[in-house]
Structures are given as structure tokens and as C-alpha cells.
Amino acid sequence: MGAKLLLFHPQLLNRTCASCQEWLYDDQHRFIMRAGQRVSRPKGSPTPCWKCPKESPVHAAGYERDIDKIASTIDLYFRVRATAGRCLSPCEAADPLTVRKLSIVDRIVRKWELAQVACVARATVRGWGLGVGD
Image 1 (cartoon, rainbow, N blue to C red):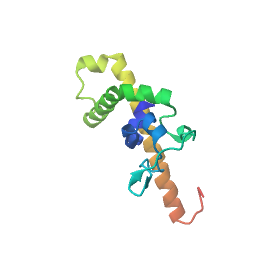
Image 2: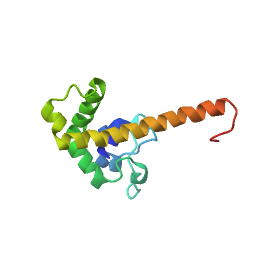
Image 3: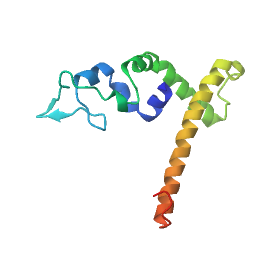
Image 4: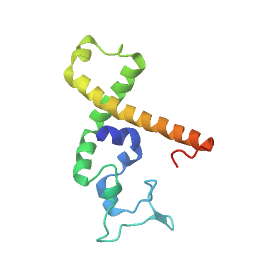
């Protein structure tokens, strides 16, 4: 999940759960401002954990703790992808943990890429007036 967060919601990396508990944010993950000041979350009001990609403060603590490791794995994934694996040493290429981490990131990225292709295809079909996907 940390890879999804870093790849698709990087703006949330600058926002801790403690910050969300203290301040109100809009749907674009920006502070809600009034008269140039941040708006505090009213006491007792629920946080929007139900719609947050971090899921909960418990999950977020792990992501925030491991973000450097996750970012390093994602960086390696894109270097491997760009060089068809030639950037890996023989030791790295044979390391089961490295292969597993890269495989996890690859599944996430491919799923996202397929979703993007599906969006473009739906928009194209709608543009043709076929009514598919409406």
C-alpha cells in the first residue's frame, strides 16, 4: 500500500494523520483557509480516514516510517524498467527480496496503466457516440 500512496498520492506524504486531526483539508488535500488562516478541525469532529488512501493512523505510521525504503524501491523499479534490468548487478538480479519488491511495484504500476488505457478507451468510444460505458 505504501507504494500506491507514493506513486498516486504523493501530496499526502506531506500531511501526517496528526495534522489531519488538527486542521481541515479540502478534496485537493490543501488546507482550508479563512481570512488567510488555516481552519482548525472542530473538537470531536471525525477525521476523513474513510476516504484517505492512508486508511488509518495505524497504517499511516508504517508508511511514514518506511517511506524512504518504499521510495528507494520505486526508484529502483523505474531504473530497472528503463534499462530492461541492465542496471541490476548479478547479485541484485538474483536476490529474491529485490525481485519480490520490484514485482509488487510492477503489479501496482501495471494495474494503474490498464486503468488509464480503459479511461482513454471509454472517452474515445463516447466521442464516437456509441454510448458504450455511459
